[in-house]
Amino acid sequence: MNRLILKKITAFVLIWGMMVSLAGCGSRKHKSYTTLRVGVITYTQNDAFINALTDCLKTELKSMETAHMKIIVSIRSADDDQEDQDEVAAEMIDAGCDILCVNLVDRTAPSKIIRNARDNDIPVIFFNREPVMDDLMQWDKLYYVGCDAKQSGEMQGEIAADYINEHPEVDRNRDGKIQYILLEGEAGHQDAISRTDSSVKTLISKDITLEKLSYQFADWNRGQAENRMTQLISQYGNSIEMVISNNDEMALGAVEAYKKAGYPEEEWPVIFGIDGLKDALEAVEAGTMQGTVYNDKEDQAREMAKLAVDIFKETDIESHDLSLGRYYVSPYQKVDESSVEKFLKPRQ
Ligand code: BGC
Ligand code: CA
Image (cartoon, rainbow, N blue to C red; front, side, top):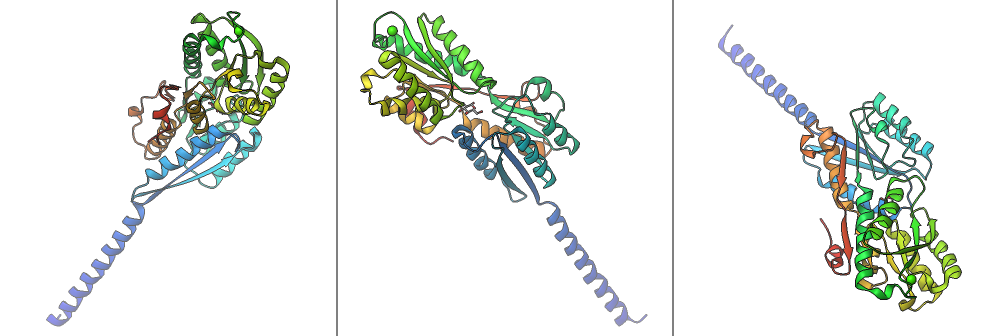
């Protein structure tokens, strides 16, 4: 073989080798770029707290995107129907989602979602509406992010008791008892049952004598609570001295009812909620509500986002410090006139 031919062959082999290695780089680059698809299904689209929480979740997930990982978040609601939610979950799994975040409609009926997720190996983070433990323990890729409802009831009871002790005029008719109404969230919801129970027990343990006028379910909803309260105001007149509400939206419904009934503010009862949503914080600042308990949506959203990413990347989730390896419990915080300012500032 003469020299010239040898040179040509060498050059060809070199160029071909470079092309192959370039193509190799290209495909390696393609492989190192992953997409995490998170499917979020809420129980309804009409719940102020849940909407605020899912907004935070979306922001948190987006902030965790990197050059190597794109995160696509799809949020749908179940219109208060468990069968609808089962179907939406199935559609999301079929469409290729990697992790599901589920806010159950009926917390006692997660079986279909769990079965489908397990068959397709899609981990599920339940949030806010807590499945019973037996269900959560069915498979090791099921998690729960929420709060300890009892703690929120106790804090609400403490804020209310402290307020009454400092303001004896709450007992407007001076009979030594506080005539009260309790607005309850939703029959069967872990937060409703536990908040009602622990709030009342805490007030009693702090030596407040209570007289129950009425307990009313209003489905966590401002409009429904306003209707119930309007009716109760016409029944009891100005003898209602306190309204304890399982959440802020219903407490704000009570505020609305008093505004519309045209009572002067000195004749309003004291009103306490739970959640610390913006409207309620403003009501505490304005003095139309006397307190609330902060349900830390930012913390819950951050934990859900981190958990989703770590599960997806198959990172060890030890650092999440989950109780029983499954549960993340976000702490509540008391909010009253003296602390409301710090909660009104934009939070991280
Ligand atoms: C919140 C309520 C909300 C409910 C929905 C509770 O934790 O305090 O505002 O309506 O969750 O499940
Ligand atoms: Ca009284």
